[in-house]
Image 1 (tube, helix red, strand yellow):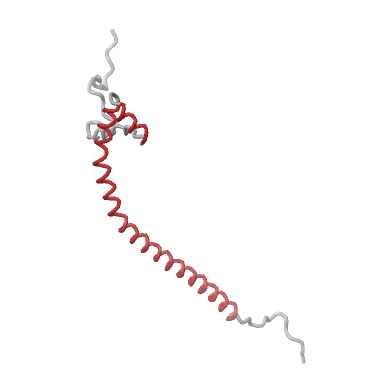
Image 2 (image 1 turned 60 degrees about the vertical axis):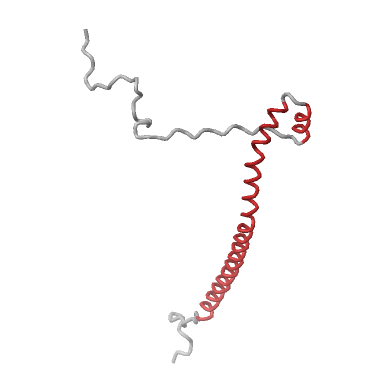
Length: 131
């Protein structure tokens, strides 16, 4: 009789513990990600609320800018001849803004890089005859 265990026939291993540990780690990782997503959603909601509250102030600022810009330009023109206006311009550091940049020309099908200029000679496939 052979009382020694056969080394060629390995005993089956129980992988339940390993799988349980892997799934537990994955569940914890997913929980942390879910928690982060919930926090981000709260931050986005707060940002939307702050944006909505600041929208009114932004509109007021734009209206004030639209009213003050012509006054500043007039004051800059007057400052060239009036000492009091010049002192106000210097005191409040009023500067003339840059002129608005004109919009670029619209690109039409005839205004492309592939089209020939209007003063270009027509292209011919036949070379000129040699004299």
